[in-house]
Length: 141
Image: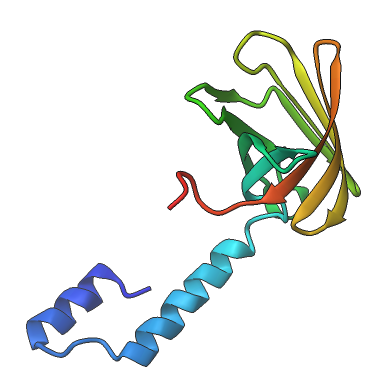
């Protein structure tokens, strides 16, 4: 990215930065940032078997296993909290959290594709089929 002094110099000189050069620099910065993130990093939506959204997860997945998988959840209302435990082993994923209402929930998933995981959610005595799909930024635009 353009440093503050370089940008100040360009502004003072009255010459705008070259659009192609700026675009290339932005692309390089985004690529560098992505290389620091693992495949689960970002926003995900947990849906039921009928496709209805249940929870939104924001996961932090450091690249190369350089740190633990962590994250937060939000239900489709206003409740939110931290994921108590998140573990990925190969193509399996487990998320433990306590949603509104106080019942502990465990989500166990198997990777179907890089953007879709399928499995089960158990909350209290209730078990139901769910899927986790890659989502865009929160809040939805």
